[in-house]
Length: 70
Image (cartoon, rainbow, N blue to C red):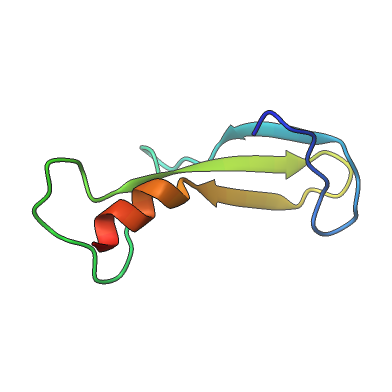
């Protein structure tokens, strides 16, 4: 997320990186993922927020998701 991102809603470039949390970290679990793996089957979710319009963009690691689907 180091490259300059544009907001998907308003096109602004005032994006702030952070995490998307509840009482703990929020994870994405792909449907059909292997249950017993050496690695956890949860994929952490990163967030970007546009400080112009408030849009929140969520991002997961595609390589981790693919590794869980094999």
